[in-house]
Image (cartoon, rainbow, N blue to C red; front, top):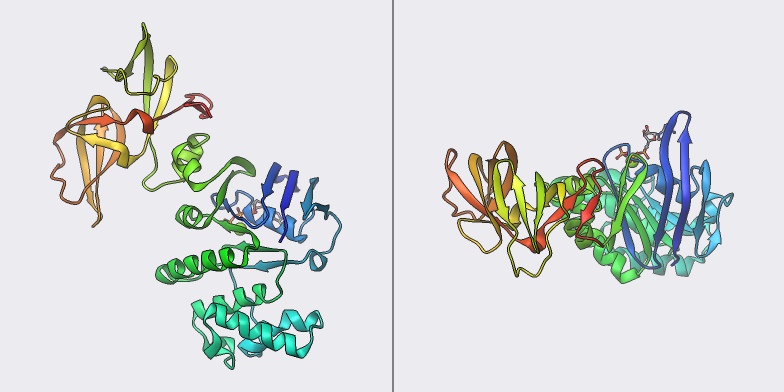
Amino acid sequence: MAEIFLDRVTKRFGRVEALRELTLRVREGELLVLLGPSGCGKSTALRIVAGLEAPTSGGVWIGGRRVDGVEPGDRDLAFVFQTYALYPHKTVAENLAFPLRVRKVSREEEEARVREVAALLGIGELLGRRPRELSGGQRQRVALGRAIVRRPRAFLMDEPLSNLDARLRVEMRSEIRRLQQRLGTTTVYVTHDQVEAMTLGDRVAVLRQGRLQQVGTPRQVYELPANRFVAGFVGSPPMNLLRIHVERTGDGAVLHVGDQALPWPAGCGVGPPPPGPLELGFRPHSARLGSGPGLGPLRARVEEREYLGGAVLLHLDAGGQRITVERPPEAREQPGEGVLLYLSPRELVGFDVATGERVWPAG
Ligand SMILES: Nc1ncnc2c1ncn2[C@@H]1O[C@H](COP(=O)(O)OP(=O)(O)OP(=O)(O)O)[C@@H](O)[C@H]1O
Ligand SMILES: [Mg+2]
């Protein structure tokens, strides 16, 4: 187990800047998810920690020791890739034992550890099979087992579930979570899937174009996104963004949305946003329809209705701006209908119109 620290890591491939001044601390024993769209630098960051790539500038520390120049094999980390890379001609038991063979562990210990890991992953029955005789999920389990059996200081996982079908992915996701908690091994897990990030991570680090956008618990990232990009990337459907203009009036405020003027609810326990133009963010599930309390009424018209089984999504036009609200499955609103929205002041965030940074609430 070890803390991993990246200090202002920049990586360039010719003209491409894959990482720009990435500073990130992965705490001992935590599972940190690196989340971001394709090409944002996730794999590059992981490969730099593993020692498979050298940073252009900046440094990497593992367990308090600077590892620049330390060979990948001497970093005592286990890498799990998207493709399982099992030895096709070896049995599951031999595949699991391989990392121990290389390290000259005694035969008795080798057998004990292989049995232990197989039991942990529920693949005890499969030890005699070869990879081609396994399903995708079973193969990925063996690949995980091979990482675990060595008892490395940290796991580095690069989209390990992306080759599995949706159901298996969900199953393996909770399995990885359970394993990681049980072993308490520091883990960096790369994905572009925000649901995977939210469900797996103790903390989530969001990357965009090689730059760190925000690090926080899934809840922090969801409720208080650092900027418009994070607000749009985390959560599905994404956070609504409404262009507004805030006018201060005495000790209160009026929020102008197009030609509608919404008084800031007095005594709601939250101060109004700062005056001037603002992009007001709120989650689709945090709007109430019909009656307050809250900030409202915001008049809107239903444009589209999507039935999702457990919920209904209404896509609305609010004075020329498109927003989405989530409703219970029994909701009746139909396209063409006018609705009144009330927003919960505690669930609002404000972004700077020009920079996209969150400016309200602070913190
Ligand atoms: N060896 C390389 N040579 C040149 N460019 C590279 C190399 N490796 C990565 N890049 C570039 O660096 C950027 C970051 O790549 P990286 O593989 O880290 O992205 P990623 O976030 O893992 O994406 P994905 O989700 O698609 O796997 C991309 O623009 C990519 O094209
Ligand atoms: Mg990648």
